[in-house]
Amino acid sequence: MGIILSVSVGKAEPSEHASTGVTAIGKRPMAGPVTVRAPGAKGTGGSGLVGDEIGDRRHHGGDDQAVYAYAVEDLDSWAAELGRPLPHGCFGENLTTSGLDLNGTPIGQRWRVGERVVLEVTAPRTPCRTFAGHLGERGWVRRFTERGRTGAYLRVIVPGEIAAGDPVRIVHQPDHDVTVELVFRALTTERESLPRLLAAGDALHGEALRRAREAAERVG
Image (cartoon, rainbow, N blue to C red):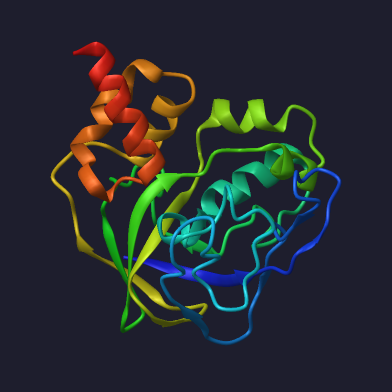
């Protein structure tokens, strides 16, 4: 069982690094419960957390990327490597978790957070120029990609409220081996693995599923 250390939301602010001119990547932990709901289709739907803004709805948000989780174990590892503190939410994560191997988690795994909310793992996070500019680290996209500790996007299956301190219980474990890390590698540095992603079925993020199907058609 894992635990939610913090639940964070962000407000859109001007950014020279974002293609839209604004970003809400800088999230801040909330003191009390936050409502979680399915936001709707990508492009029109925003974040799954009420009060959390998104600067670029073309590439972020929507049902398949409603909530972003990052493990404190990985955040602390980066902080040690970079030689500076990395507060919860600074990677743009909504949920900072403890006790969960997010990168080794299979796509389609479901969590019960607290007493009611159910979330489903859909995809890894892909680093972008906005992320690099936000952190101010040279070569950040390359470094983050090489490390492959991406955290996980989740869709909302059962809405409700979540808060720091809520336990995370796994309530569904898929019977395939398509993990968050495998998806990330297949989408970036090991594209020959794309057909393997089809084993995750419709639980996989829609864009990744499309690319996996196209790759399988080319091979077969």
